[in-house]
Image 1 (cartoon, rainbow, N blue to C red):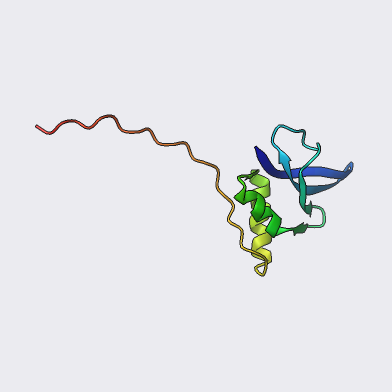
Image 2: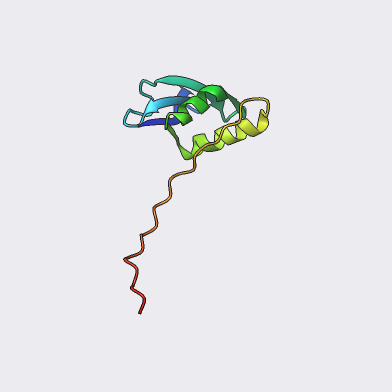
Amino acid sequence: MVKLRLRRVGKRNQLSYRIVAIEERLARDGKYIELLGEYNPRRARLDMNLERVEYWLSKGAQPTNTTRQLIKRYAKEHPAAAPVETPEPAAEPAAEPGPAEPAV
């Protein structure tokens, strides 16, 4: 499964991240499929290609919790960009009721 997650880059104590589409089983800093944006928490800088994010979401990619929050924040700050609906994590299905009792 493809995930949208952060890839750590930068020097020690000077963190910066890239938002990437990557196969779930690969290492955090492993080879990614596509670069979708950048996030620098030290400078509070966030840049993202929302069209490509929406494409990957439509293909079934799941964003991590942090990435989901960054996508929402970027979409809110840049309303001119395409609206993005990030899927919430799937809830556990409720137990199905047993067979109905016959009316007497």
